Image (cartoon, rainbow, N blue to C red; front, side, top):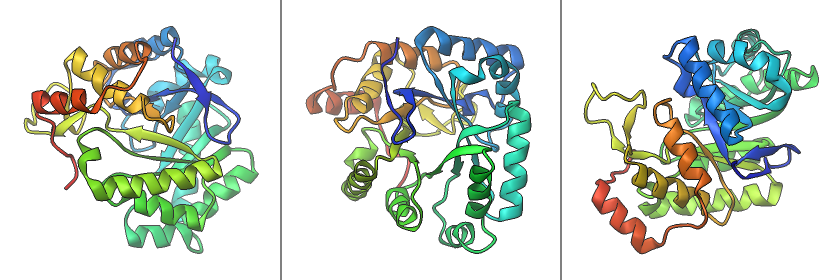
Length: 286
């Protein structure tokens, strides 16, 4: 079974591997439930979805309803105005068949104009704060992609005391000195405030080169079990005890969960350099 640790200040002991429910965006209900059942076998107790993840919320709802108390449930809104964020959250609650989510996140908040709208009068944050007061959400987080995300998350945390952040991390990305400087500064801030840190894109091998690839990720993923294990162990081995969100394809899920259960120690730098050469790792963001 997977190791669990406190999810920041929330009081919840979450599995260090969180299910990235983007993987359910384009699958049938039967396929979704087989993937969700696999989480029970490995002790995953934290689901992370979003309103923009295709049919993900729709697929989760029927399966989760009788198990609601067993899972920390997170979703996201990409809307930036009060009215649209409120409407999207209520739609998410309906699809997820629940009266509340544990975590609502401002999704991919990295654009300057969108940032000002979300935090300004009549912005999305007002809707999330209202929902928290009403008991529709318990905690509020922020997510993002691209190289500027760690800096933008610091800016967001200066504006509002978020409970969690989510951003990319993998070995190829770690070779970018500026990104890692910003990432480390963000983690220092999160540690001081007891803010949970979730990581994505652990299995990214590089940008998608074949639009016909058989995976639903928007990048080219690692697929070899040994390569997946090294990538997963590298993230889980970070001394700052990060969470790893699984990639957006259900066919990769068993390999990630198996790799995570075998985790004991972080691979050495020499091992990872050799791994990067062998797999032809390339950065997703330049």
